[in-house]
Amino acid sequence: MLFLNLMLLQKADLVNEDASNLAKQSILDVILSSGPVGVTIISILIILSFVAAVIFFERVFTIRRFDQTDPNFMHNIKTYVQSGNLQAAHALCKTTDSPTARVIEKGLSRIGQPMLDIERSMETAGKVEVYHLENKLGFLSLIAKLAPMFGFVGTIMGVIKIFYDISLTDNLSIGNISGGLYQKMITSASGLMVGILAFLGYYILTMMIDRVINRIERASMELIDLLHEPTK
Image (tube, rainbow, N blue to C red; front, top):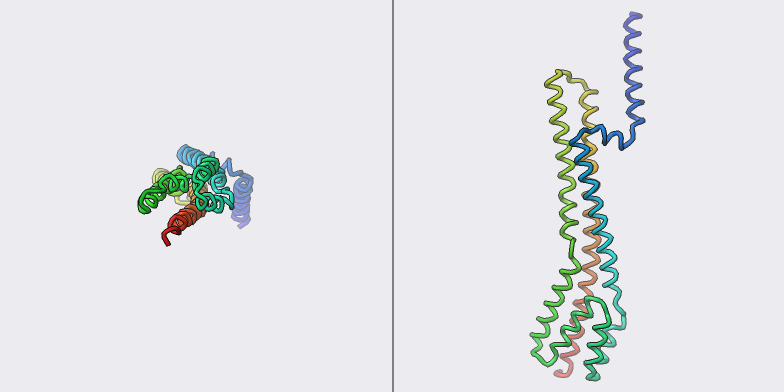
């Protein structure tokens, strides 16, 4: 009985020592211990997160720069058009670096043509501006979809390796399985984190672009209403 107690105490000490060593491991240690496949996938996810961050901040600064239109812009345009000073209206549009100004300038350049042609020209110009605003957003959406997939691939490959090792050693202990699983599951957690952040960035940028589109549409409607006024 004494021998059995000593054996149990020794086993408990070993378990406690393993738990203590596990607790001392850093995230980097866990990543490095996940094997070549895990390290490769984590490296890919780090690259994807860096690309997503670069795209996000570049688009944020670009959209904010284009969204800073003078609140008196359309008031000045109306004043120039109503007074017949189209040259000043064109000059104001050229000196205002914003999608709204470029769309309005396209409409001003078609004054004298049928109203339908003016509307179509501004609509086409608006689509071009939206395309420039949405540039690279497709890559951000792709990263949001790919990152979790890479994470799941890492986990699946890890599980396959665990069961392959079990088939070779015939050792079906909980410690052996869980020790491999926690190392492999970090790829899934990392993939989900990158995917969630990329999707959040994509959604934020989409809302910012929608606000710019709304301003373009309002300005276009104001110009069309203004050009209709003399015929009322």
